[in-house]
Amino acid sequence: MIDLKKPSVAVVSEANDIHKQQDHVAAWQQCLSMIIPAVGEQAFQTWFQPIVPVRLTGNILVIQVPNYFFYEWLEEHYVHILKRAIVQVLGLQGKLEYSIVVDQNNGMQPYTLNIPQNIQAPQLQRPLRNSMGQTAVVSGSNKELFDSNLNPRYTFYSFIEGECNRLARAAGMSVASKPGFTAFNPFLVYSGVGLGKTHLIQAIGNEIQRLHPRHQILYITSEDFITQFVDALKLGEVRRFIGQFQKADTLIIDDVQFFAGKDKSQEQFFHIFNHLHQNGKQIIMSSDCAPKDMKGLMERLLSRFKWGATIDLQVPDYQTRIAIVQTKLNAQGIQVPDDVVDFLAQHVTDNIRTLESVATTLALHYTIGKAELNLALAKSIVQKLCNTGVQISERRFSVAQIQQMVAEHFYLKVSDLFSSSRKPELAVPRQIAMYLCAQFSDASNKVIASQFGGKDQSAISHACKSVHRKMQQDETYNKLIGALKAKLSNLR
Image (cartoon, rainbow, N blue to C red; front, side, top):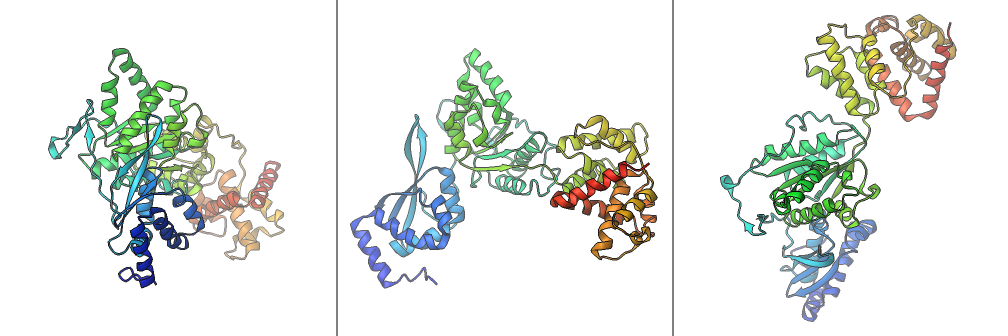
């Protein structure tokens, strides 16, 4: 174990030699010899190999890193390892400072940020510049707040968490807690249509507003940005246009892919991005694809999108879809039968927006139209609203018919399906029979359960969830269910 307070005689002697020679390259090489074993080869190549030693002045070693995000990542993830190496090489008074490379007039120049390496992440002073380029001091109640354009309905509370979005949600909450002071700057979320991008980025904005009331937040879509820029250009008010964005502490841009082909708008956004990022302001964006797949955007703008964190939102899994339906309807005071929830979760799989639309329409039929909230109503709405490619059979079967077909397929007696045995040869056919009954009979879960030896209706919901999960995970099992559905459709 390395004693930070008592560096070895040999190391101190070697450090003194380096100190005298003012050899920054040798000092950094000494540090790396201790860092590599601690972080591993892959982390070394990613986070330490790009670092360039600049100079050694007294006991201060200056290193150059590619960008601000790089610096933040080192401080948040490797600060203890860096400090240990510096102490071992330069002695107890050793310090580390960073020189950060930023673009200036299309050329790469180092921007020196004199930040002594500490255990705590530094709280940087963040000057606000007015439209004339002058530094403005912003303090307390003297700060003029402007409309954020955020939708108050989009919050973390209403954002349903699941495996499909857990990482993105956690990262978003981290950004909201310390906007501008995390490694996630810029923070870019991407996904297909209707998977919650806008909800998440606005939830971050609303949470920042809740935690930091004096924080200036501005949300805008890229299309509105382009429209406003064109108007400003016609009126000769480009300086004012840029100034309103430079005042933001957090800028949230939705659907940045629509900047494609709009070169002048991209140019202005590029300068706004640089100004905000260099002043420690938070930038949050959404897109329908990852930066590497974006077409029609300037390379230097795309490179900036990659500085921070890029996280995707995936299609919601079955359990998340269940939670979305229940939350949407329960919020309106509607208790939904399990078979209805299960049906919606299984057949509306393309995106969250469609699923919420179906649930809202279901609630409308129930509350305004006084319709009975049952499986038949759910199927009717899905067939009218969805284009999922799933054919919902109009033909219905009795529970007895389905039980008989399943029993014959597995060479069992129908009475074997009533067993509570957990042996796979009985449990698997029983769950499948319950699942098919829930899908292709008009009986409620309660009635189906009563015809499986008097079981509780929760057993049907559990069986449906289990079968659906196995279908997603096991291709052979999925083909088995398909074969049984085909057999069922051939019954007379």
